[in-house]
Length: 413
Image (tube, rainbow, N blue to C red):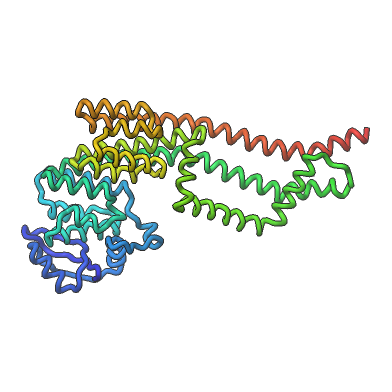
């Protein structure tokens, strides 16, 4: 199939236009005619065809080609919010999807929604049409939409989904924003030290080598490091890249990822923060899905994938099996020892009071606030720490250079 851009007149005589996938211009005109649209112009568009090919939900999306044209979670959240508003206003689903097509700025998302609208027009369920595009609409999104369609409250579910996606985007933005400045400082510091070791230190230390003076240990160490970096950078650079790549590949493998995830949770400062972020995402997802009418076991299956940690994911999977046998959520999570006692206690209260969804939302809100506060404190501590480390490294270099000069001065006296 190819992608086409079309324009025409709808049943009310208003100008309409959009993009759609079809076998030929003739079949496209026939399909639009059944929707009450008289097509006046059809042109094949390579960009639309490419976007449709990238967005088609057959598991064949182009990852590298669509990197700069990918669908962001924030765009999905905006689309979901607008769609919920239109449905609440009484517009039919297909008409609401058509109204949003011209407002979407991302060509790939436009092509995806156009394909979804076509499938819905042909009789497919909205959730099934969304499921054809798993890279844009995750399983949690599709499951909640399916529950909303079954319960007849799709507009409410979409509004809840928009809240959920916006909360996820905000949490991710806070975590990323807290790490940007420290990472930038580390990179700049490494570049400065590299410049000193390669361009400045060899010129100064060459004077000491010509003088044949007995140098202190720190100056000898500085000369050795400068010679190693300056003379073998062409080997050190690919070795560093290979080491980083090997580490990333190992942490993403089936054997390495559980070990790495367990190690992250045991780190002094990073571990508790990573655990709180995972708990906040898990409780927010589980509470939102339960409130939307998704069954508990199905909600647990989907929510555990949100955790992003193999150890916690295994705990939830085991808890799901125990729940299926009749045990409570709080008891199974508490027994693992991996979820904070406050979380399991609040979940237990929610279960006994019949307000599990609300209690999960309270837990998520409390932990998201705590994550935000911890990130702010961590950023505040990291900045001076990096400055102190950088200052210490520069002080070592300067002291190692000046110390032989001071010794020469003492001997001269």
